[in-house]
Image (tube, rainbow, N blue to C red):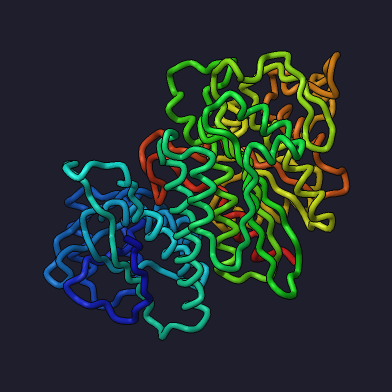
Length: 490
């Protein structure tokens, strides 16, 4: 059931009320909320008796005669104006703590429409749960909020109403993306992914799907080679959005390995269950184009998802096999577990071929474990051949609240991809493996086409504790940044 979201000037009672709490320079707690008439002194005494600290991600429940319950969500260090991401995370933490409640009002400080949208996004993102595969007799299932009110003391302007609408559209697609990532791989095969994406697509998005026969006939050697070892054959889905008077044209390409065993370079059993998330990039680009289309942004978008299972069988690609990629380059597959770059290479060439006047192309992939070693589990990497394009994306990502960090493409590492029998090998120097993977992909992008490679291996799937608006499991990472980039691209 979708969570209802509304903007209100008056909070009905009794309604659980979320307000902010921070700590000032003197170490004292400060209530931070636009709601007037609260017994501030008494509430602060109560919070101190509960040993509340106001730290980020801390949520404190206090019984209240008027509202039934007050929920104090930590904002961290007191600021005259809190960042949109601080508000987003505080709202998300509160919403997560309110699972098993049906209704709540959020009264956090919003200086403008961006702040209001952040609060709404956090509340909605925190109100996510994935129960699709739970049995009817499952115990202790706590359903998230089904109705959220965002309080504003001023009469809602069109800008405020638009902010709420944006939050609803974007979060609906983030949660669709999360659902795809969380689905078991026996269910979410490449073919099932295409069907679910087609059913989710807005009316103004065109969907085209190539099956395994069309892929082989069309010369998609990378996708075919990765998927040929599985009983569930590969697919390629292309979604297109073409508004009138589009101001620019972007292409998104998302890695869609619906399960990755490593193929004949079999992964160890420990941690392999998380490999159902190896299609996070494909899910993110599909969710992004659907959100952009629903928001009717004036920009043309192509979103591509090459989908395959990387499995072990007598038909799986062998180490030292040579494959011919779309466009004609040959690749020696030294490691079948470096498969994501093969499916992306095919589509990077095809995407530029069918849209020769692209403003830019972006691939999104859970590509390397080296990304996690370098940047941890909450920050993704950006590599590029165009620093102006990268700078614009990083600005968009910061506004969206997603953490990315620029990484280089050192030309001296390119020689490690040389092969004695093919145009290049699919692996090279182990040290700097994230950068080598980026250099491999760069071989499939024209030098004059602005290109970004987003390695989201760490932040795409949360195997730790929930935090802020981030649940355990699929995160939907990169989608909000792609939408924000579309909003600012001219």
